[in-house]
Amino acid sequence: MIYSYITPSFFWIVAGMIFFASCTTRSQFPISDTAKDPIRYQIVEDARAALGAKYGYGASGNKRYDCSGLVYSIYTQYRISLPRSTSQMAHSGQPIKKTELQPGDLVFFKNHNTIDHVAIVSRISGNKTWLIHSTTSQGVVETHLEDSMYWAPRVVAYRSFIK
Image (cartoon, rainbow, N blue to C red; front, side, top):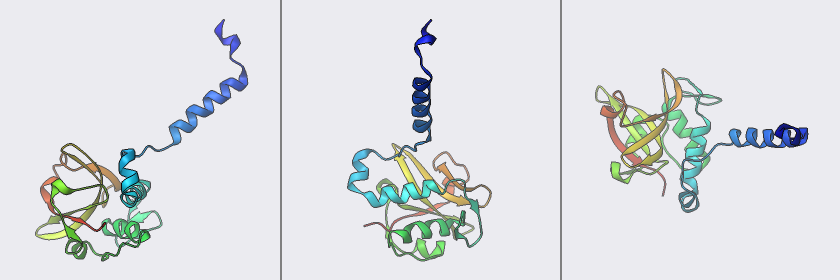
């Protein structure tokens, strides 16, 4: 019987390897991108670490964020200066086109002619753009922009604050 060759120590070594492999997070960045732009990589990884945090109006940390509070708290860790409010952020930084978006850039949204939401680009693949943002209904989530009937039509601006 093959089971007689599996020692208890071998079993625990294999089980441990499987456990630790499943616990590690895999980056959505290709290796080459992390080397050439480590700030973008870190911003996205920090945003990803906030996934699941609750929404809190005006909150910018301690596992509670509003949309601009999430962006503000992450960017200031890297000494990137930006305003605290979404509408002020939307008028700062470098305006870019959607085709120029990179992970770590920001996407702004409007509701009734008021810019009221911001999200961090987490990854781009072909025509698909993923965003990490704090929503009032779900807290910090990662969503696919182009498939969202709610978010896609509300996009008003793309900005980069990373040089």
